[in-house]
Image 1 (tube, rainbow, N blue to C red):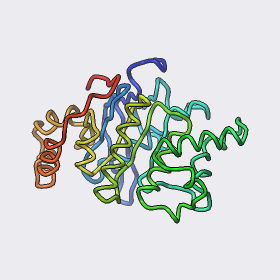
Image 2: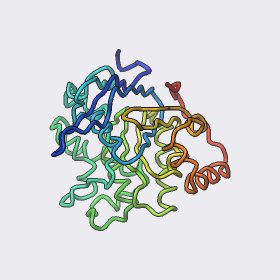
Image 3: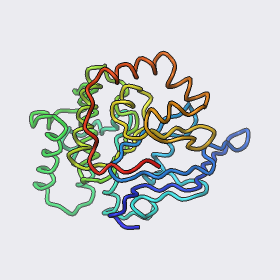
Image 4: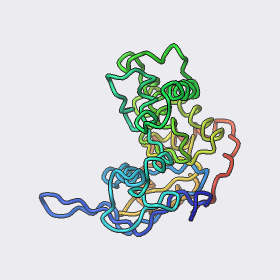
Amino acid sequence: MNDLSATVVDIRKLWTVFKSADGEVVVHRDLDLRIERGEVLSLVGGSGTGKTVLLRQILGLEKPTKGTVEVLGRAPGELSAKGAANVGMLFQHGALFSAFSVLENIAFPLRELKLLPDELIRNAALVKLQMVGLEPRHANMSPADLSGGMIKRVALARALIMDPPLLLLDEPTAGLDPEASDSFCDLLRGLHRELGLTVVMVTHDLDTLFDLSTRIAVLADHKVIVSGSAREVIAYPHPFIHEYFLGGRGQRALEALHDKPAKAPPPSAGAAH
C-alpha cells in the first residue's frame, strides 16, 4: 500500500487488553475497520468500548495487544518525524500549552522539527490561524483569555499546521454551546471539503454525528458491530443502537437533521466497508 491508496487506516484483528486488580479487561477483540480516503468516519459506542483508545492507537500513542493498525500502509510506531505529519489530532479539551501564546501553540509541531526558519514557521501559523476563522489580533493572546470555541479553533489550527491528510477528532464539540457547536461543525465541514481530509471522529453529540459523518461505525461487544450510513446503522438490530439512536435524544437529532437543507457530498469520499 502506498500513500495514494484509497485505504488510509486499516485495522485488522485488533485486541486491546488492559490488566486490572481483578485480572484482565478485554476492550477490543478481533476488531476490524477500514477507513477510506475522504471519509468522515464517526466512532460511537457505550462507555468502556474503547473509542478514544482506538484513536490513540491510530495516532501511535498506544499499541494494541494483538493485531495490526496501519496508517497509509505503515504502523503508526514506524512513522518518522516527517511521516508523523500524516496525522493531526484534536484532543477533547484542546490540550493547549498554557504558557504559550496562541501563535506559539499553533507553531509548536513545526518548531519541534527544527527544519524551518522562524519567519516561515510564524507565517505558516498565521495562515492556519486565519484558516480556522480567527484573526491576526488573536495571535498573541493567552489560552486563558480564550472562549471554549476559540480554544477548539486554536487546537484545530495546531492539528493542521503540518497539512496532514488524516485528522483525528476526540469529542470536537464537547463543552460548546449549540451556536458555537454549529459554527465549529460548519468550519470542520468546510475544511474537510477544501483540504480533502480524511477524518476519524469520536463524539457523543448526536447533532454533530449526524451533521458531519459520511459513515458511522458502532463499537459494541468488543468490536465494530456495524458501519454504514446513519440509516443503515439505525436499522441494525442491537440494544445499544436502539437505545442510543432511537431514544428521545436520537429522535430529536434525527428530526433536526431532516429539517436542514441537504449538503453536497464530500469530494473523494471512499465507499463504506
